[in-house]
Image 1 (cartoon, rainbow, N blue to C red):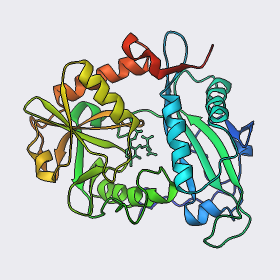
Image 2 (image 1 turned 180 degrees about the horizontal axis):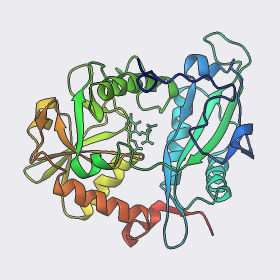
Image 3 (image 1 turned 45 degrees about the horizontal axis):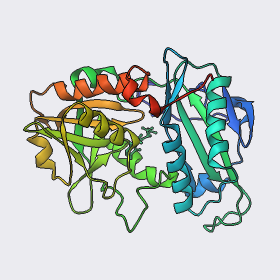
Length: 323
Ligand code: PPE
């Protein structure tokens, strides 16, 4: 095995996050350099996945950086915490302010935003109740989630052998750290097999979601969006539904089997990180023309206009960082 083929092993005494430049991090109420935002190896969340998080983005606009749907992200973060019975030691307004301050402190024009709330170290053992609840907000620059090629040529998906979390096993609507082992397993298999992303089905074989995206498909001019069922209620999903309706498309919520995706005119995925990413192939079947679909690309353009403050109809979605 050559060095290049070796799997990455991280042996970093500093914690192994050197590949991410997060600059200044809001850490339990104060802004500190990334090197100082450290936790103990006996952190409960590290052992049992007892964390909840968000993924939001700030985009450059003519009026400086703006955070997209900030309150909706904070609300979902608190909903996730409630589901996991984690008492958050901050108000929603304090978390909103922490996010704004972190973007401002780093002078980003645009960035990805990762708030995280987790059970710290006090006792180890499954019961998290004695462990203090911590919070942080980190930001960094994050480009095309599945690469530029996935946008231009369309992403190539493969149905995963891993099933999307059954509702009575894990709370899929909580953005909880532990839930993401499901996504991690599916993503590793897909990438190792040469695909861009995995398609997860639910326990009954219906289409669930990607490892970090919701799924839409277009058939005979109707836009179908996979129903919430076991999936995360995506904020991008909701935004794209509203944008599609505003452009005159009929949008319908539905359950679907995988062959409905195979035979769709277009398929695309939505997510904060993925934005709107067209899908060109699933399980070796070309979707529609086998290229990025025109409706997906149009919705992507309109979404990018909305997030960058170029669509007055959706300006209420933006929180401007410099007021
Ligand atoms: N499903 C899952 C499982 C999911 O993780 C995301 C977001 C979505 C749907 C779309 O939700 P929304 O971002 O509100 O539209 N995935 C986040 C994490 C990605 C990661 O790799 O980490 C994201 O896009 O920020």
